[in-house]
Length: 162
Image 1 (tube, one colour):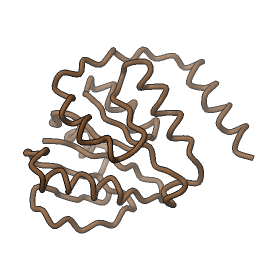
Image 2 (cartoon, rainbow, N blue to C red):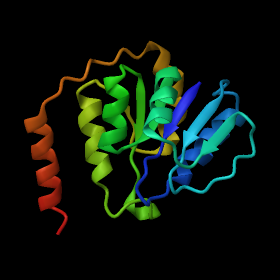
Image 3 (spheres, rainbow, N blue to C red):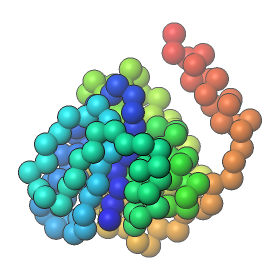
Image 4 (cartoon, one colour):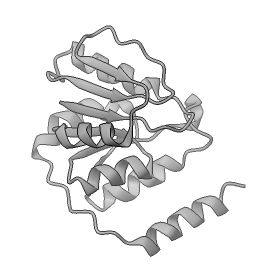
């Protein structure tokens, strides 16, 4: 099973779900996909994709544990909880130009984790097929908590919002 996490903020990410469904139809994805969609309203045509808008922390933990790997938006919380469970993660940033977020800060977040070797970080949904095909051979580096570094990243982000 593949678990997709779109977070709980009031942001959509329909582009990612359309690409996942396209890859199901193309038989690149052959297993069941469970999506924690949050505010993304999407009605899949393929029965291999199950959408759940919101779930409890306990339900989220269960799906994360059962997943072969996780596809997530570029939110720090979703990435970190998956890494803490030692899951292979593909992360795709929401983009401002598609109305998916207030700015493009998720690009930086995904790049940081990708450069550290913790995840397969993408810049666009069009890269998802290649990432899925390579996920089995991907050996993520364990995430080492560095609160000072993360706090600085968040502080810099907040300072640059203006």
